[in-house]
Image 1 (cartoon, one colour):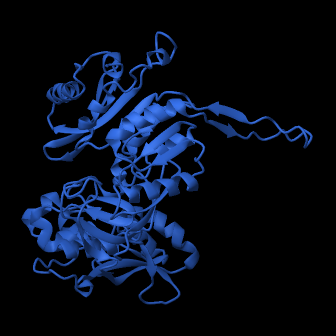
Image 2: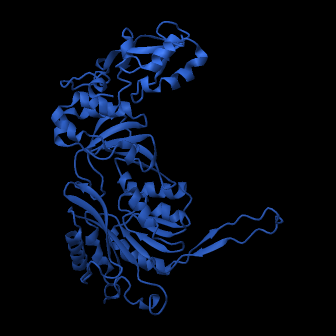
Length: 469
């Protein structure tokens, strides 16, 4: 369809609008329609007139006949005029001559409900601001929060959600339109019940990684329910940290864990690493300093039936690194997994349960607090002092892998960031690691700002650090 014709179907423009007036967005478009004179011929006529039919997204081409109530009509392209047969295709003329259809006027009425979020916002926002129209947002449960210009909402839905909240982070030039943007967003996304806008950096005001926000539209209730990797989480989004865009990273790391291993999740939050790992029959000692995160974690453990594998705690992460290592060595625990009996087996011959013993040392430490997790690394100095015989070469057990999250500067080439991160890790542990060393990986997680990127530094805990006196 030509650009001029496409403009016919766009909403009316009002650049002065600051409070949404839904009644303003309505349009009557004069078109031609092919009246199908016999009901049983609707499908045939529609097929015959494929090239003549109106092709506009979200518009149903089969309409009620404007002349006869019980009949149907087919909307035709704007080029076709009812009173000018020279604009008709050969096929349309043929059907008219055969008295299968009759060409008539039809007024197509469009209202606010027809147009999508992008349509409405381009009709309201200044033209100079439309190159970066806010289309991306974080969705958590029923809360929606804007992220300025990111992939479309459907691309960001990496979790299964209910009672959704859209979490926004609007750029300054869009702030005068924030309530209007939020209202349209709420209207055009049925799964979203609440829209909020972040007003500070995550963790800038408190150690729990929560943030200040303003309610832009919808319900003030931020109690949400999120399903990720087959695990159900419930929490108050205003009191805990959750980022749906980290779903891929959660999955990537959990895939490294093997059944029967023990993992120490130092900053576990409500359990996006721990609970899916528990589903894999991985023992996780999961900790978070935030009492509300701990409460959400405890609920997730019970709800997802992984209590045999996850041990929640609410402690300071610095001390937890060391105390968890000691307590794990001292704790005797096994998970018992029941097995279903064969259909042909007698009721008395119930199979023995699978016994999975908890190891005496962690295979992985996870530290997902990117603003400061690297500063927790000194706690690994001497963490296994005097316990050398637990590990290689005395046994087949290796020292744990450390996965520490951090921020660094964004660049086309991550080489400089990798060197910088390894240098910071080395300084904290008083032992040098370098990019390219065996079992040293600097993983690019995601962009968090125009010049800021999140990374995960993974490395084997050096014996020179773990056993240091």
